[in-house]
Image (cartoon, rainbow, N blue to C red; front, side, top):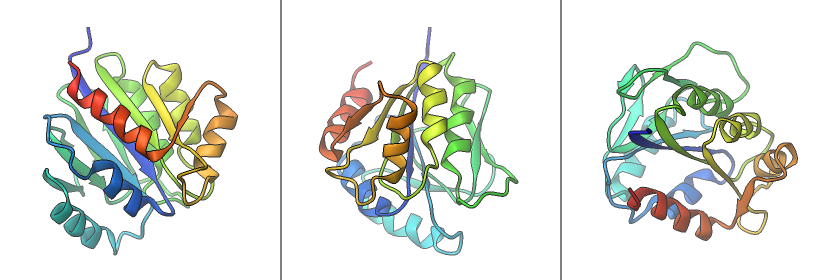
Length: 187
């Protein structure tokens, strides 16, 4: 039986505004939300501070191993979930053209699917980061969705995810928010 819940979100171009729309007004239900938003590490502390002022829950920058509890966790560089309970995440020394790397975050979630209900969301962005990781999570039993072309600023990452997995739910950002709220409130 799965005893916990976890939300994983990947975003790139247009992501900060979409993350704000997606998470604004969501109350803390004690469920961790981990975000990999492509961004230069220099800007991440400013993003975390600004995002924290706009949310109804604590926003924490992941700069070292961190145990996950209720709140929003922002990866400051490529990070991976630890295959342990309680849930933990730690930065990884992985070279990538994407910082943080969404595929690494999503693929690390496969290791905790056996004891954690995961909702994985891939938002707007250029390229293909996150698409393969979302596919791996889907195959492991996670609930997976990607943003539609209608609401994405750039439909690159979600489009690639749909090409890899034709069964993937592609939803408008408003519908993703509704699904997220349902996931957070239903126990």
